[in-house]
Image (tube, rainbow, N blue to C red; front, side, top):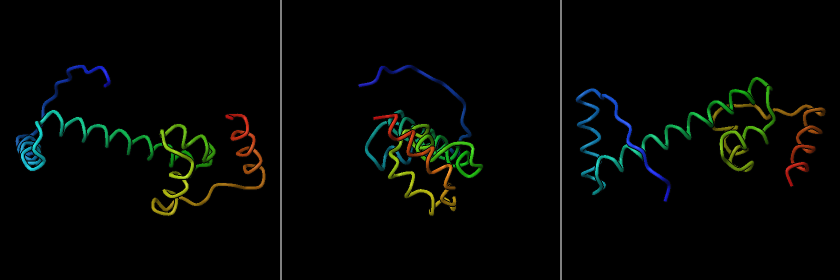
Length: 104
């Protein structure tokens, strides 16, 4: 299990009430709900940032997967869902293959 640290922050009352409600529904404490929500939000933010760089053709899809902490397959599946065109020109395809081969 990962080492835990305590982090505190303020929430609007209605958000805190929603977290408490969700914790009751799941049968867990508020901390567990908050850890899950924050972890999910961080993952989404990393994926979004990586896809934005792919969209701008600043990084390859392989690097985006690495940056987002996902597999290349998952990044490929995210492209159409997130309306990101497949980013490879012939030169970029060659660069992608070199990166894949270099990571083995």
